[in-house]
Image (cartoon, rainbow, N blue to C red):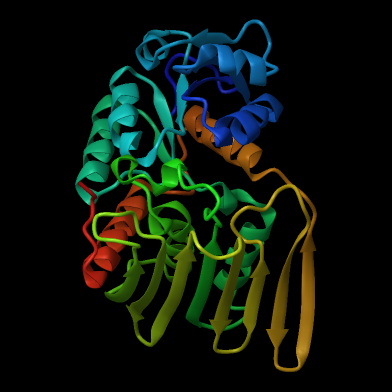
Length: 336
């Protein structure tokens, strides 16, 4: 959807709701480095901390409440990195204020919330996209191209793991029930997104097991089996109680793609190992900031009106899969 107020060459003017670590360390530098973006405002309930940590130009306006940023007519697009439980509310508030929205994953906690967000975006004529930055990295673009061209034949199995060790951080927001914490919605969602992208549809059936220390506590680990029909399957697992690790293996009828560091590429070289018969080829990808590429893609879609790589229908299907996995495991979702 093309902006009616700005030329195709004008940079998108960004505001950020909240001073989450991913915003300060990743997204703000990405906006500042992007070819079609300009950071103009940040809202935080701790504005002094933001000023201390952020080397932003003096022109960047820092607000002490989110409402003031949404009322700022100079803000065109908003990035929402708030806790999971706040994504739906503040994304919809931003949309109703006339802002385009890039919402950090997960888009919402439930399909019902996600559908309300989609309907609000369409009613307001604004762009809303879930932020899965890894999809814009050259590594993932190359992998998807090879799958599309049939390099390894029809994909029959995807194995994907993402662990993020929080054992020494018991107060982390990702372990808080009221904030929508959990390993599946925080890191396992990357694996779900990958499987949906590869197979082009939601699974037909799921089976899962969940580990939570006690009833009513946030789950720390999930193992799930996904059936996509026609002999196509996926095995995914996520954890907050194992050493940090991420890996994805895509197995086709003629070969295999093994991805090292598939979900948080950027600062280091990443690799894809292609195996076809006895032939093994390692494809290397130099450091490339996926957050910058995501910001530039969003801005380009906003200016030109072309649809984004990540469609909201895809996000809604992944939310439905999250609900199905938790339901299969007998885990209450959403919490509360």
